[in-house]
Length: 226
Ligand SMILES: Cc1ncc(CN)c(N)n1
Image 1 (cartoon, rainbow, N blue to C red):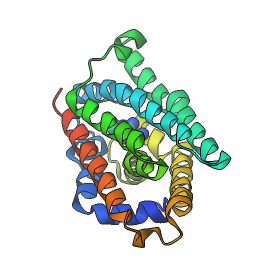
Image 2 (image 1 turned 90 degrees about the horizontal axis):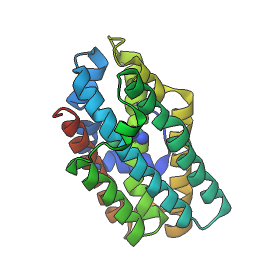
Image 3 (image 1 turned 180 degrees about the vertical axis):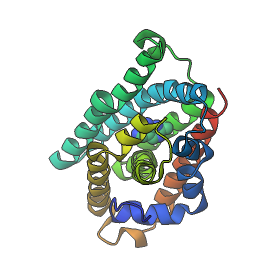
Image 4 (image 1 turned 45 degrees about the vertical axis):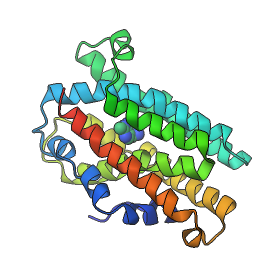
């Protein structure tokens, strides 16, 4: 199955990331959701950590509003903050409530170091850089799950994790991935130039993207060790 098209900058950074991208999108945790072999307690542990992750990740997208230079950039960043807080986190709240974990318990989940390392890396990329640096750190999260969802909705052989798969394969999440891909292309063109892959900044942006990808791999691994 060919991966969805989320724009030029993302496609090039994904290719440059190489094996870590494959390790992320084909991790044992992902394959366990595909065939239903992932233990439920590992999934719930992951989901609780991911709720905490999304709180900090929403803050990083709010920073993208701060780092915007045009109204169009602000609109795209605001839409993503809203999609995270108003839509994606509802999956976590709903699944946890159905499993007897209250909202208060969910919110009070102690943060694992793998989680902390990832979100603070993304925030730091934004604090110390411009919107292009921040988007390079944000993109693996947004588009990686889009790619995983699009594959698993076709390949899953079990119904156990259908709710999770449908959230990321669904049209709302897929549209968000495309919108972020367009934002990346426009933000890089505006700040670096149309030929952004030839600029001296390109290698560093790819390194940021690759580090965020490796932190995604660590996050799945953390999910397997409740
Ligand atoms: C760790 C992680 N990475 C990505 C996503 C998808 N927004 C997420 N919910 N959590």
